[in-house]
Image (cartoon, rainbow over all chains, first blue to last red):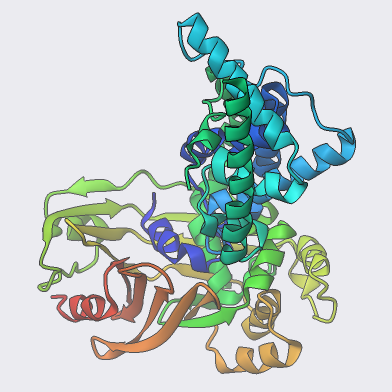
Length: 186
Length: 318
């Protein structure tokens, strides 16, 4: 890096020329699992989640020059794109994607445990599918992507306290249904 | 509230999927940038801050050699202008990219990577400038590194058609573009620079010292007019830009645009001259740059340090 470039890089957030080279590979590695899981929770299907994840990153990559680190964290910017991708997806498909293969990736060699895990995942996915759009969106950001309430507020434009209230209510309801179904099974 | 059950759907993306997607994304990202653009980003940016964006396109005539040049830009003073974040976003959204507009006609001598040297005497010989050292450093500094960046230069041709098109995309149609300068040539000379890096557990400060960059202009350029166009591009109203352009000595003032929401700037007294201190609004310590000119040399002291320390460091240079 030239000496002059170093000066510019320090002035970086100030210069209109410095739409700036972020470490895109590091950002990709960091954000991919979050975006992917956001979609898994949002659409309930791993294959569709992969497609929508690809679409999100392709859009983000195509518009990298617009990303301004002085205005928003990269993840906030990326999740804004991801939510738009999800909205487009639901607008196009007009119906919920079937809850298939929600636990496609076996995490254990114990067949019995695996069957149980799959059943639980399918049950949870079914509960999520019943949620209204807004609640499912927030839960996907919280539990799929692992965002904090503050980060969710930045992405959605809702207030942090509003998000806390909605999530609290929704989780309470889900918890009830989850326990209820379990006790019926038992 | 127990919400653990809600996390159980999480899983890692398939490695194959992750790899394939990255390969798709990385192809355009790894396309080598035009070396001209890469190396000339600093020069182009300097040009922007010197004369406003437009000056780059509109310098006169093709007989580009020394005796024909009556005008010369050398940095003697720094000044900052506040730019609205909306305007900066607009420049980016509209891909207002100087690199693309200018590079095609550029004739560039590229610099090598900076060379690490053992002491300031060697740096002084290589850079052919008197090299100053701070006698006051942040307490935790344990490592000092000295590098010398060789000089480089470029010449390029102005393209007023592209300038006009770019202005139109910004909705600026009321400025007078000096079309007679189309195809004229501008030379930029960036002299060698000495970079000193000071690192400690917490501190990270760099000092850069060099002779002033020089931009050689053909005769008859109305820098004030060109500067005014540049100021319009960064969002000033016609009246503001006219007034501001009149106040600036465009032959010796390096103008630095600072987004209003991202940074603060002020003039400071440093080493018996007036310097420009720009600090980010966020971060502890803040990122700051202190710029000043002294004895025909320009200095930049920058790093994660508080402003008082930076100024004291600058004042301790010997």
